Length: 181
Image (cartoon, rainbow, N blue to C red; front, side, top):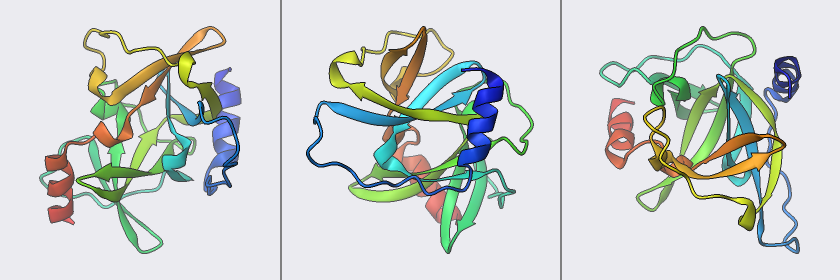
């Protein structure tokens, strides 16, 4: 998919609620993922964890938080912490533009559900993956900690990293965020 196609796709999906009815009679060995771009890499999160996709808007900074914690956003009365995935993954930072997207997700931590927003370069597509297509994550060197990656899948000729969004922030980091709010 070209950069222009990704940007057009991202722009058309901004501010859309992506929750959709699930066919309970479908093949249980197939999962769906929302794919997105960070730099030149393709990533994906479980689509059932996605609450909303919205365009970038300024956030309220919280003092004494890690740099990758961009701040919080008031989303219809819910305070949502916002994490810049580029910074979290030690990637080169870029300026936010009208094409920058925030994916609002449900994460599970300490037996409860929390809401978290992640800043990404653009949203690509919804990907259906059979369980047997998911490959184990190899040691990736140092570019990204593999603890966040639940597996890899090949799409056309590129690899997509499937993120385990529940492991993106530690329990301690989530608790510190709640105290700061």
